[in-house]
Image (tube, rainbow over all chains, first blue to last red; front, side):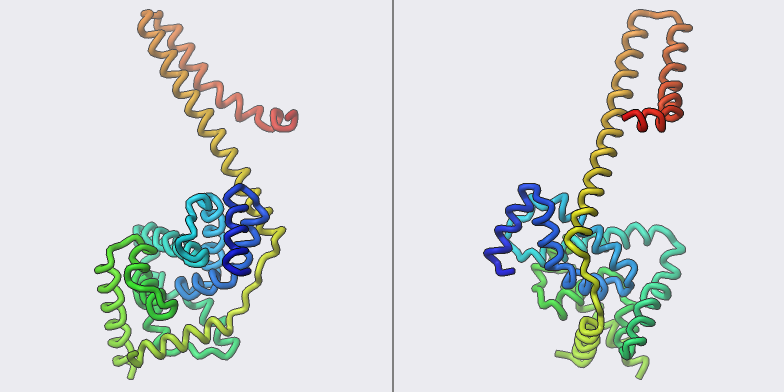
Length: 179
Length: 99
């Protein structure tokens, strides 16, 4: 789907056409799922989050103004939903205790079955706080600027910078400990 | 780019390559959207009914108090407000089947 065609489909979706929204969502499903999987490091959470993103996207499609790519808009919704979920879960003390142990276990198993070696870098990445992990992922893997990440995560640019800096420092420390 | 960034990026790339994504059909997505809309509509109606009930009870309560109605009438009124949702819940299935 080229950008002109995409705009047409967005217009139709904004007029309430379910099929148009479904077509848009289907186009970006794979991209969104892969992003969410890397952010959550848990296939089950990723699937649920993608579905929640779809429903929230459908409810707020009127607010999409085509100033950013549709894919960026979708991952902004997914990021905010995930961070909200994490904030809520952190209030439950027992979740905090088991979070890092349980989240990646299923993904680790699935990936190792396909020959992926879950190295120290992934172990370190998994230990980072969800908001730090998300910022690092958006900056280094997806190439967004600090300003864009700040908008996506609804925080200040300075906070993004410090989260990425501290996160990478922690990751480096973790790798040095393992060596 | 630092060594740890490189390692992280290559791990992420590998995850992307390995991950097999089952893309849902257009029909499945459309069905989920329709179901979501139905749920939203029914929760809106429930909230609206609750709002109207609360507003009515406050209104009636204010009138009864301003008219200095005898206490037993107010008690009957309160019992009525408690009984209505219970009766509605009891007859819900019957009402739905008739609709």
